Length: 292
Length: 259
Ligand SMILES: Nc1ncnc2c1ncn2[C@@H]1O[C@H](COP(=O)(O)OP(=O)(O)OP(=O)(O)O)[C@@H](O)[C@H]1O
Ligand SMILES: [Mg+2]
Ligand SMILES: [Zn+2]
Image (cartoon, rainbow over all chains, first blue to last red; front, side, top):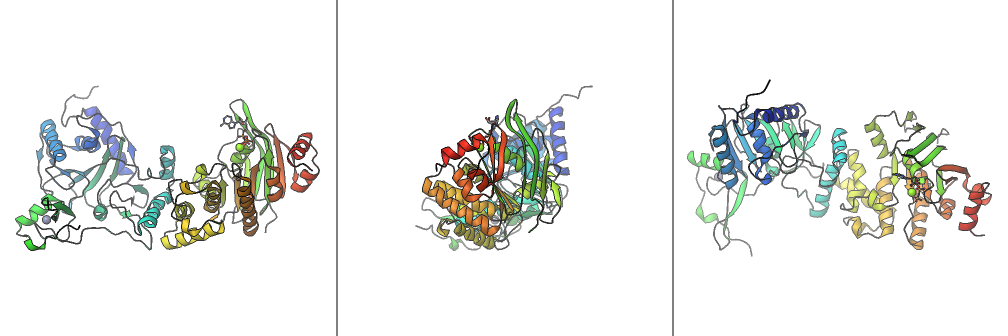
C-alpha cells in the first residue's frame, strides 16, 4: 500500500508521519530530546528548519498560522516562513496572537496568554543544554538518562563567580516536570515563567541537530537556580514608549544617529493590540540620552 | 572502624583483544589502608586500577565487592548503573595521571571542586563556594586563585586541585594513577607530603599506582608488584621492599633504591 503523494505544507506524507511520531514521543516524555530524520528544507539551517518541519507536520488546512521572529511578525525571516506556508499549504496567516492556532517562533514567547487550542512551535539552534560543559554526546545522553544534572549548576556557579549574579539571560536552562533538563531555545529568561503550566502545547524543533522536544499543556517547568541566587526574570525597568505597557518584554531601539534610544514592546502584536485599545505613549519627553 | 574488608576483588582479568592487560589479580583492601601497585611500564597497573574502579569491565573475574557506608556489602557489577555512578562521585575518588582528564579545564577551580557537591544536590552557592575555598587551602592553593581555571595553574597545582575535587565529598576510597608522574622532583615531594597528610587525616583508603618505589615506601602500608600483567609479589610494603622474594622485585629494589 502506498500513501497518497501530495505536498500539502511541502513535506511528503511519509516524512510528516515520521516527524509526527517523533512529536508524539516528545509529548509522551516531556523535555526529552527525540532524534528525528531532519530533512533538507528550501532555506538555510539558520532560518529555523527544525521549527518549519514541525510546523509542516502539524499544520492542517483549517489552521491559522502566525510566525514571529524576536517578537516581530515582519522581519525577513518571519515573512518568508509565512509566505512559504501560504504557498505550500494555502493556510490563512495572521499577526494576531489570539487568532492563530499555530505559532512558529524564534527567540520569544508571545505576551498574550495562550490557550489550549494553540500550538507554539519554537525554532531551536542548539538543543543540548549540557553541551556547554560536556561536548561528548554519549556522556550527555547518559547524564539525561540518569538525571545527573550537577553540571548545569556548575554552569550557573561559573556565572555567579564571574559576574556576581546569574548572568545567563537567554536560553536559561529549565527542568520539565521535575525530570529532564531542557534548553528553552534562546528566548529571554523573562519568558521562562510562561513555559510553565501553559495551556498550549509547546513543540521545539532543531533542524541541524535533528532533535524534537516538547512541553505538554499544563506541565510544570522550573528554571534552575541556587537557594541564595534565585531565578529572576529580567526586563528593562521602563515602560513601552508606544503603548505604555509595564509588563511586556522591551527592546531597546536606537532612534537616530545621535544615539537616542527608546524602549518598545518586543512583541509587536501585543503592542499594536494595546494601542488599538487606546493605550498610548506616556510622554514624549522621557527619552533619555545615550550614555558616553 | 570495621575489620571487614572495604573492597574485595577476585581473579580480575582483562584482555584487550588478544593482548593481555592484566591477569588474575585479587586483593582485599581495608578501611584507611593505602595499597601501592608498582611495576614497569605496560605491566598492567592502570588496567587493574580501572577494573577496580569499574571504569572498564573485566574479561573474566567479576567478583568486586564493596562495603557501603551503611555496612551492607554490594556487588559492584550487579549494582544499578545510577547507584554505581553515584558511589563513584561520592564515596570514591579517582585521580588521573593526566590532570586534564580529571579536571574541567574550562571551569574555575571553585567550580571544579564544587561540582561533586552540586551533583549530590547542594543548592546554596555561598556554602558551595566556602567549601571549595576551604578545600583549596587544604591542598595549598591560594584562595585568591578560586576563580581561575586550571589552564592558568602549574602541573603541581593542577594535581592538587584534582585531589581537592575528589576529596570534597569525603570519600572512603580513592584511586590514584601516578599522581606524581610528570612533576619536578621538588614538586613531587610537596605533593607526596600533602597526600600522606590528607590520607592520614581523613583515614581514607587508597590504591596508588606508581612506578616509583620511593613513593610506595612513603605512602603505602601494603604493596603489589606487577610484571607482564600479573601480580608477582604482594605484602607489607616494608617487608617486600626490604626483603624482596622475587628476582624481578629484587632487581627493581636494587636499581631504584640503591643502598
Ligand atoms: N586500550 C588498550 N587497548 C589495547 N591494549 C591496551 C590498552 N590499554 C592497555 N593496553 C595494553 O595492556 C598492557 C597493560 O597496560 P597498562 O596501561 O595497564 O600498563 P601500565 O602498567 O599502567 O603502564 P604505564 O606505567 O606505562 O602506565 C600493555 O601491554 C598495554 O599495551
Ligand atoms: Mg598506566
Ligand atoms: Zn508597547
